[in-house]
Structure formats: C-alpha cells, structure tokens
Image 1 (cartoon, rainbow, N blue to C red):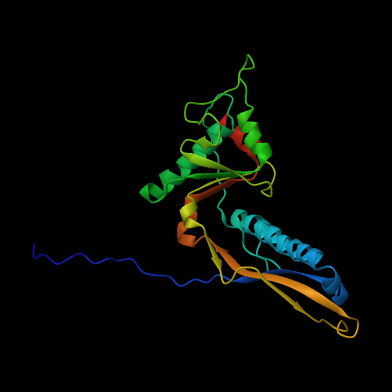
Image 2 (cartoon, rainbow, N blue to C red):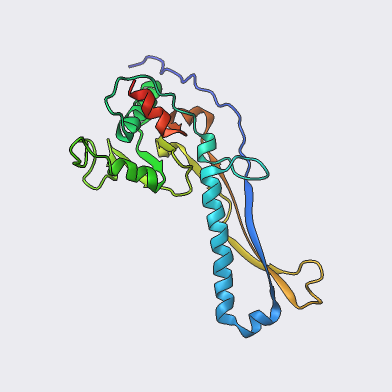
Amino acid sequence: EGVAFPESTAKFKKGSVVIEKIGDTLPVTEEFFEDEEMFASELELFINTNVQLTVDSQLCNGTGASNTLVGLFQSTPAYTPVASGITDANIYDLVVKMSEDITVTGGAKYMPDTIIARKAVINQMKLKKDGVNNYMLPPFVSADGRNVDGMVVIESNIAPANSIIVCDKRFGRIYEKTGIELSKGYSGTQFVEDEMTLKARKRLAFLIRNADKGGFRKVTNITTALATLAT
C-alpha cells in the first residue's frame, strides 16, 4: 500500500491490413426479370452463392496476389517436425506435437483449440487400425473423433490436400465492412440492348497479427512429417 503501481512497458507497433473487394457479375435481359420473377430470385441466389464460395476459398487459400485476401494457410507459420522416435506415428501424434510446439513456444498465451483439415485427412485419422485390424482411438480423442486432445476438428474441403493446421482460433480475425451487397446496373451497350448486369460484392479482410502468429502451425506434407516423427 502506498507503493507506486508498476507501469506496463508494452508498446503498439503500427501495421496495416488491406480490405479486399470480392464479387461476381452476371448479365441478364430485362425481359427475364419481368417475365420470370420466380427464377430471377434463383439467379440472385446463384450469384450470391458464387461470392460466398469465393470468400471461403480466399479465407483459406488466398495468397494476397491480384487483389485477393491473405488467407489462413498463407498466414500460418510452418511446423518443423523433429525426430521423436514415435512408433508408427499417425496424424493424432502429429497434431499433439503441433499443439505442443505452439504452447512451448508461446507459453500461457496460447491454448490450441482447433484442427483444420479436409475430409480425406480426417478420415485418415479415424480409419487408423492396429496390427489386428482394430480401429485405434487414443484416450485423448472423443468417441466420434471430433475432439482431439481438447481441440475441435473442423472439416474444410477447400484446404490443400495432405495438409493440416492446428491453432488457437481466438487470434484469427475476419473484418467485414458490409454483408453481401446485390445491385443491378447497365454496362456498355446494355441499355439499348435491354440487358442488365447483376453484381454482388463483399468487402472484407482476414488478419492474423504478426504478434499472434505463434498461435498457429501448419503442415503442408503430412506424409513427410509423420516419417520424421517416427525416426
């Protein structure tokens, strides 16, 4: 009591993230809108879905080139497996070692809670058998295989093949300026040709701060990583 309170020495470092515009267009005739109102809504759903699919793809695999997002795989540091002498190493072993690498490096800051991979990789985990063809389910895995060592398994079939990510998802952020905006307008000679263009767009950015990248690890060649863990 009465002692000066310790002041923080933390400082902010300025950074920037680009908000990209993702969209799609579709030309249609004006008569189509007048005569086929029910199907016109289907067209709007079609173009809206196209944008959503593009957003999902870029959030996962965007490289930042040609006005695309810098996605999850591009932003995530690679995990470097080390020889660990694990007998018959499998993907369960791999994700546990990836989680260990995050927590050992980052200390108490990170609590890995998410595994992201495509279905083929998830099935490779679930279908693992022992020497007498019994399915192997480690004691740290839930009965349905959707929770591994306290980490939820998320299926993403746009993730690269033979790849996997382990992360603390709290430190990945999606910034959205608006929802998907749908509009109609004329392009070029469309006015005199009784045509219109449907346009859908969405503005967003994906960010893992440089200071938080320690909470993420990726493996882009599971086969090679398992071979290393087994040596």
